[in-house]
Picture 1 (cartoon, rainbow over the protein chains, first blue to last red):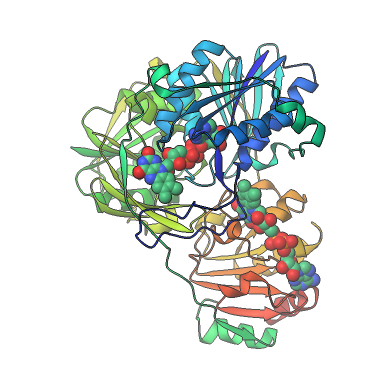
Picture 2 (picture 1 turned 135 degrees about the vertical axis):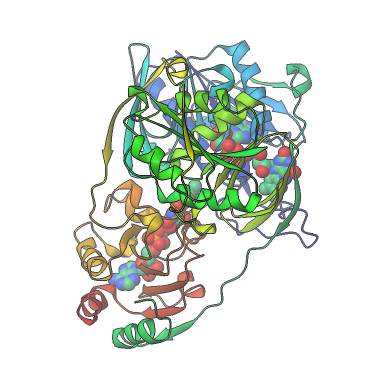
Amino acid sequence: MKILVTVKRVVDYNVKVRVKDDNSGVETANVKMSMNPFCEIAVEEAVRLKEKGVATEIVVASIGPAQSQETLRTALALGADRAILVKTEENVEPLGVAKLLKEVIGKESPELVIMGKQSIDGDNNQSGQMLAALLDWPQGTFASEVNIADGKAAVTREVDGGLETVALNLPAVVTTDLRLNEPRFASLPNIMKAKRKPLEETTPADLGVDIAARTTTLKVEAPAQRQAGIKVETVAELVEKLKNEAKVI
Amino acid sequence: MAILVIAEHNNETLGASTLSTLAAAAKIGGDVHVLVAGSNSQAVAEAASACSSVSKVLHAEHADLAHPTAESLAAIVVANAEGYSHILASASTFGKNFTPRVGAKLDVQPISDIVSVESEDTFKRPIYAGNAIATVQSSDSVKVITVRGTAFDAVEASGGSAEIAAIDAAAHIFDKSKFESQELTKSERPELTAAKVIISGGRGMGSGENFQMIEEIADKLGAAVGASRAAVDAGFVPNDYQVGQTGKIVAPELYIAVGISGAIQHLAGMKDSKVIVAINKDEEAPIFQIADYGLVADLFKVLPELKDAL
Ligand SMILES: Cc1cc2nc3c(=O)[nH]c(=O)nc-3n(C[C@H](O)[C@H](O)[C@H](O)COP(=O)(O)OP(=O)(O)OC[C@H]3O[C@@H](n4cnc5c(N)ncnc54)[C@H](O)[C@@H]3O)c2cc1C
Ligand SMILES: Cc1cc2nc3c(=O)[nH]c(=O)nc-3n(C[C@H](O)[C@H](O)[C@H](O)COP(=O)(O)OP(=O)(O)OC[C@H]3O[C@@H](n4cnc5c(N)ncnc54)[C@H](O)[C@@H]3O)c2cc1C
């Protein structure tokens, strides 16, 4: 079985982002970039499926600027076999991401697509569902467990009230939640090996996809800041304040 | 043009999140219709019809909609989308699962997790774990939106008597995916996203057994129990307790964080709470920077004291 995994290059989760003074966006110059954590989990899941003998080939794809090659190389070092970069300097919205991936899938014909549930920059949580819809494939979002057998995927999903399990006919799209697995670190020999793995480049124009944005970001602001309050010395003082000052208990 | 709100429910009661979504619909303005898709869900259709801001209820009934898949639900919404300027659902795991599918089928870029309505086509939404708020304008002819419940006060669930119209479901049931089972966390306590008081524990709790101390206080306060990702990953509590950027977004009257350091991903889920209390033995912990009341102390000493003081 062939698996397609998508990876996005985002501002590292440890960076405290700062809104630009002109309110046009957030500062991304000279900021550490990394693979979106949910995409790392997606790569790990694919590699485990290959180690179990369920998957035979892992193709990893990213949409973004030339620097996204680094993110793809990381995925190759973690165990993916080859990479595809859809190169663009544009900010591609999830609808555009889904349309581009649909074209890539048309050429690659994977039986399973594994994506992150959300990017920690845009926080949209849309791309996987939109891709599944465009392909008319079943979807298993926010996965905390995936079992593949007999042409089906049993996906346990993290939902608000607990867990839910759905059975999907393959091919299908799965999006990862935090508890699916704990991604490994790439070893040095694997990082070296990854440099020789194939990385193919294409563009939205080559794929014949219009990625014109449907939304415009008018401005980006810092959120209202909370002021630190006071320190209390004892539990009695805390309870007194909550009762008489804040009046919340 | 009217607004279509997709109801979140359990076939018996209309979810509180839907009342907040209806409030966002009222801010946009215009006729508001509600779509209820379920099985034996007449009571939900009636509850929606009783909301004074609702002028019509579309009701789809089918055995397979007892636990609708995103695939089937999206297909029903798309089949009924004509004539609507906006399609809204709550930004819960329910809404996030099917609305992007609706967007893709309508060739629309959805707008996730709005926290304010600026005009009929312009909305505010948090990005980067709430470290920035983007004002986004949509040029699509239909706006497909999920609404952050904590940002809108619920509408009145009474005073109305909207017409209920049956709509077809059978033609839209997707046959390549199937609901198999669910394992809901059983609790007598209020739901995290609806609770007025929440007490959450972090890695500092040390074990699942120690969460007992949190639960006893929750029972005294009528509070819900939450957790940081570290506490969930360590297996102290179930996954659906997680508060944060990638867990639940909450905004209670009172949020008590115990043994939680205050990572940005956790703050993203709770910093809009009215009053925040932090209990942590490290006075440098970032959680104190946003807490209204901070208690620098060993939680194993002060939690029993707090229980007795309530
Ligand atoms: C400040 C700011 C301003 C912005 N302004 C605009 C704007 O004006 N117009 C505009 O179009 N966009 C804009 N964007 C970009 C936009 O918000 C999102 O980054 C973009 O829409 C993608 O959404 P997402 O990454 O949140 O997708 P999600 O749906 O959250 O991503 C889920 C998963 O899909 C996959 N995926 C997503 N994107 C890619 C990719 N590029 N390559 C490979 N896999 C991917 C990954 O597996 C990811 O985990 C802006 C972003 C920011 C932060
Ligand atoms: C992609 C991604 C998504 C994430 N999403 C979320 C999310 O949604 N929600 C979330 O919470 N996190 C999330 N995180 C994780 C987040 O970055 C932090 O790792 C996590 O919040 C830390 O949890 P904690 O505060 O319980 O643990 P720690 O940071 O380890 O803090 C434990 C605290 O307990 C205190 N303590 C220890 N013993 C005692 C004692 N006896 N008495 C009093 N205090 C004590 C310590 O001083 C310390 O401050 C995410 C991370 C990533 C990468």
